[in-house]
Length: 427
Image (tube, rainbow, N blue to C red; front, top):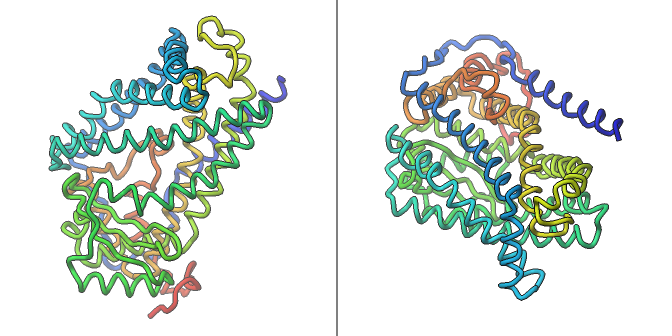
């Protein structure tokens, strides 16, 4: 058992060291003639950045504290007893009722923090014009989706624990693959439209250029949508989602209203890069690996924890639905530990998408200006965040790194393209 612990700790240490090593500067290339300087963050940007870090820490602590209180004070067992009585000992309905109650508790406990961070604060910084009714509506929709999807997963999980006490962690990890694929399929088609209206592009000229860019990147047959995110936020974004006939390029109206045409084309090219380079497929493979590893590590210790604290917890088996807060507590801990490695991977694919977009558009200048506008103009992003931020919150390279790269990457001068073979034509 000691050897297992040593091996697990060694694996975790390797992951963390790898993630730290990934936080580095960009490889130097020949400088562009129109270099865009990295903007100095305004005091407003720094205040937003610092406040965002504080809110993230508060949310993390609150999550661990809530689950610990529910678990160690026996509330989980009481919720289970109520659920069993209400469901008349029906196994499935007991799980669903329990999950509904736990979800409502979580929603209510996080409601003040969520309201402040996503509504009051966003309005105070001028990042949102969202109405209170819209915020409430979106929050309720998210809660309902979470209850339905989470309740379904909980039933599958406890069924596997019940049927295979020794291999449940492996089967659950394998089943996470079709679950992830299913969510990726239905999210752009069925879930996203619940929050905002999707319609045709208002600028037909821009739509034609985006369509031409997509064809050049080898992404043909994609629908192009403009979504009215301005009812929620003033920040900018775009994405490519779906598979086969469901492929769609989605651009926020805030992006169209804020950026110049060539900057929008670069943002779209970046998103096309994710699609063409198979990053979605990579995520479908990589994330289940971490899920399996997390569940395996949890399986090594959770039964011992239950045995030690069974009187305080009010349950003595993992197959008891009352164990859910303990499962979530342990998984949250492991996912927090694995976050630096997952974000290191995420930063790598984002850099690949930037490279793809520059090679596709051959437009260093508007690549850099698009990122520069995110510093002080609309997204309030610190261009040079600290190491801890990059490790635990940096899913993308820092804006400073991205602007420097846009300024310096000129493969057409040497003919040393990385992704030229992916394009249908390069003028």
